[in-house]
Length: 316
Image: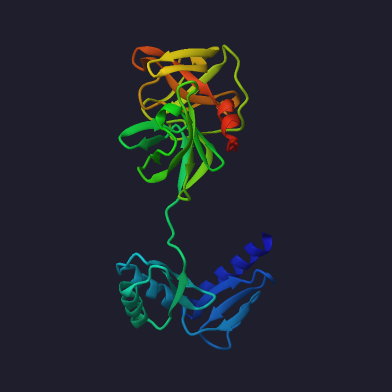
């Protein structure tokens, strides 16, 4: 918002002009007014209200810097400079608070009287992106992620049975297979946990991502590309549709045939076509050959996967 930008500009000028007397600043969300905290009475700031506080922002940042050097127990979830309360706020999980946490808090308060404590109910966790073509792990096995859907992602059915645990490209727990069909078809979907965010991306394996816009099916003869965690990005053409492939585990129907290569570990990875490769096509099922000498690869079309499990593709 323009008003927020104006207030931010005023706050930056106040910080520069007040020096050690600057105690922080904040915008009131109800009124839109900016307040600048000062450590000396009688100071005014054009375009802002002022409030006299005990600690300068430099002092608060200094206290936090000391806390940054301390090793915190697991139940201490975070600490921050809170300009509005003119304090360094330490958050602790009240459900797991223990003697170690209390000792850490006591030490922190001994460093500065500006330290305050707030209780929370859970610990934060890192957040990771779901992206087509990236590696996924099931125990000792590896496949590739197909496409992000609301609540998780789709991949090949032969990659895991319902209930199988899945880890992401970084080996961090991602979720479990919520549904899987193989043979007959070769599709599945994984319901992910809160650490993972579905993104409308496919790894181009050149430092960029392809953004998925939809899932319009490409015609026979169309150019098509795939992404997989073993061999990266490879392209070719659609050769046939509705092909039945007789794997050793049983027949799989409704596959699309291509002249694109693939290798073990690429299974489940993304197939895209159309303008800027923005149309999701399917997930790698299997094939023959390799990416050194060439090969034939089949993919399970994505629209039947979405229909079978009642899923919605994440698009950009």
